[in-house]
Length: 514
Image (cartoon, rainbow, N blue to C red; front, top):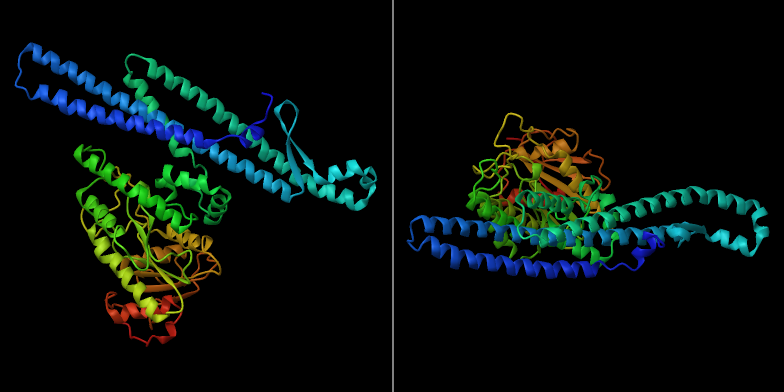
């Protein structure tokens, strides 16, 4: 190849691939409507016509074959759409990496150029100056500067080599996949085994587009990567991969909300279809969970002051719960994160936990009108279920090898660290609030320090640079570690917690442990 991939990426346009994917999606949707009409107007009418006998049986068998082929064709069209969109996303991410390398090279005093034979070359600005004035090479300062540039040059060369390799693998892999899909499209009949393999490959490809960032545990690194992407690329990735980005700590709150609002109706449709076609090996879809999704969607559709953001729609082992916030934690002066004592995705999550967070938000505004407070409901752990069939099931039907309950400490730690990583301006004042079993994740997140485990109620002030150790452990007016059995819905208690969340805990009167 005469040009490097570094050079080719400069003029590459993922937008044309995204447009092709959109067009293909329209074709797929029209075909799906056609298949549905055929099933309702042809197959169903024949089956319900009262026609009997051998001829009728033969006709029904042939119609069933055609129905299978229509479904297979629809899936084949969907596989092409997934591959087109995933390839476009990969190209966009490679372009962003290329731009970052160019920026970093300039900051380090280096320049990248397309060299002979398709290999990019690295030149130091200082080398160009030496070419103009060779005498500079004998200057000790110049030699020292050249020596200091060498590690940066080597690191850039390694990054360029990895970019070239990744781009080549994508180029050759995509060409092979689309050639194969074209052969499938040209076949008179779609082979079931081939279709199953293609479907698995497309779904697998789609799931790894964002690797390794989708599994990155450091929110600060995620934030730096996200900020490095062009806005158009970020917006497209939110549309294409809402299930991954909506739950990723280090992604700004508004973007997580965008992704999760896209994902919520998709998840609801998946759950509804799973309930219509039950599978004994798949227990994640239940009626109460579906009702919980509906209640959550209804709440999101209503105006809210402060605005309601959906920060999470996932959970341990790929199960489904929600993280919501009244107010934007990225811009708020204070962030109060409430960890409920019970879990499960059900309508009471909306009417109970979310309503509690909203009351706390109002109380915080009254406690300190000059500052803003975001109140978060965080349930990303295996809390005891409030209702049957809403627990975060591990998907194995309750086998003996199920993983132990997740106290949620690591997840809570990442979330609170992510709050600071994505926060605009000075660090937010962050408070974690737990009641009952909800104190478990807080204690676990702080490596069990602070005497929170087993407390009936706890509020923890989290330092801006949190290493897992709480700065101040406090139950309103009660020494750390003591039990405090007061109804968290009591207005006086909500006011006390609001005082703590806004930094005015000294206003609270001491209360004896009960």
